[in-house]
Length: 342
Ligand code: SAM
Image (cartoon, rainbow, N blue to C red; front, side, top):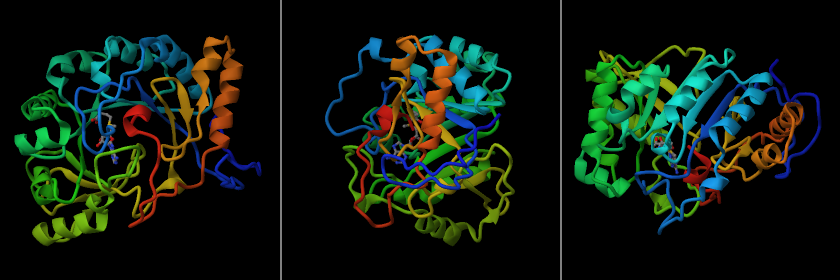
């Protein structure tokens, strides 16, 4: 049964009232690791970050236990993310266990694609059908500038390998930044003319101690205008039941899609159906709010399934109605994306 946080008047720690909140929470994003084989300028903090010790990271069996409890409260969709999920050993065995949970109807992964060629067959064997891959540029030199690593060809080869194996849809995530890759918006959009990929532009969210200046943020209306100036008016695509917050379009004659994700210029908090489990076992109702519950600590202290469900209910009840990032503002979220999981 899906839990609807509807009939209470409790306030969350950020003083956001929850009265009459009817959002249906059915989506769990699980971060498997804080480690990453890239260091994207908009994601990881400036300077070096020490990796967390192994003992602080939730073990696969612990993640499965928490997930099963969440499933009993209505979770039907799971996304695996990080850090970079493909750097964690045992990922595909974990995915096989996850796919044995009948109630989970959709399992997806967000990856930077660096290790995709290596793990693709195993991922497909473990039931993977859909992939989101981050790709901010088509230029190898710029890829190195944005991510700190010279791995463009590995990522592109991974995308092509996934395409040849029939993974569908393949969604490419792009964070456009002024003065960095804004000159490639049209070229990236044009991929959807040649391949059936979903090319998704995501607004930069100022989080943690990132190397990006707020002046580099480009909002979706500007991105859309650039694409439409080159290709003409975009045609809307009908939504389907597993759609997330992306507004879907097609370039006339395109075989793929263009997606716009606008957490800042037009936030989708009122339809947000997500919970997040960080790699250290913190359960969060919102990426952009620091409220979280240490569900792993409770599990390690012997919490029963019922007690785990009680914690999950509490986190759902405390889901903020909205975040506080606004257009043209320097409002900033303390949490680091790479630690929570994107
Ligand atoms: N390593 C994987 C990857 O690169 O896709 C998964 C983790 S990454 C944090 C997930 C997504 O978050 C990526 O698509 C990335 O572009 C996005 N992301 C990271 N930092 C962001 C930020 N500050 N604003 C908007 N999107 C961000």
